Image (cartoon, rainbow, N blue to C red; front, side, top):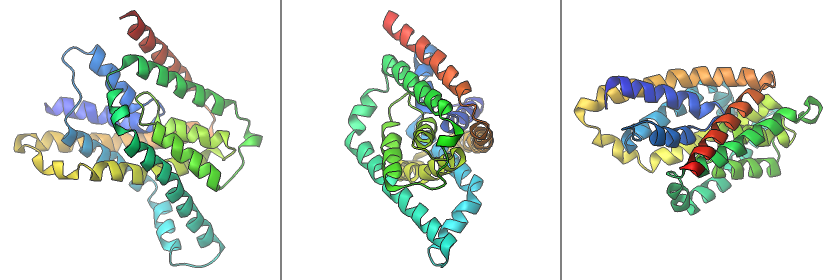
Length: 265
């Protein structure tokens, strides 16, 4: 893998991991449409995911510090943050169960262009419905048990190629009446245990990086980190301005085109 290819893949990962357009879906589409293109090895994928994980930690560092402090603090604010932690744990349970139970099924779908197209349309629908949600109906500043479980289930199903993890979880949160920025904050912090779990399952592979590929891998990871931070800031701005329809239209166009290509062979 060349240095340029590693950087390009890092940029794509950083952008599509957080923007609601499905990184896995775009990887599958690229594999089918670009001659000679193939998905990067597991080692490089792990590094890119760790880079995007670091982007979330850096971006939400103040929130994370307050959450950690709340564990041994008292007062009403600390109690609210401990409840937030509990909701994160509850949401992580269905994500883990779905991921482990359906791993073989999900992996088998990663070469199905028709599945990617259909799931991108599902992502477009969720984003459009969330966009249609009136501000008066999205006012909850905290996540309840049922909200957490439904968002966790959504995150688990987002393993399907074509369903955006960030887009689907934020959209479901908004449809449940959660205020947009709160839904986004919960979604992105919820991604931390999910990404950690996926990376830890294959962390031993890191030692297998060939010495002549170390620089390329690190540059790719750095590109993913920088673009991930930019994507996070941009998406939060879009969510606050309630302009998710931009991504809904994009997913509709890409999903329809992909589905058409798959059906016409």
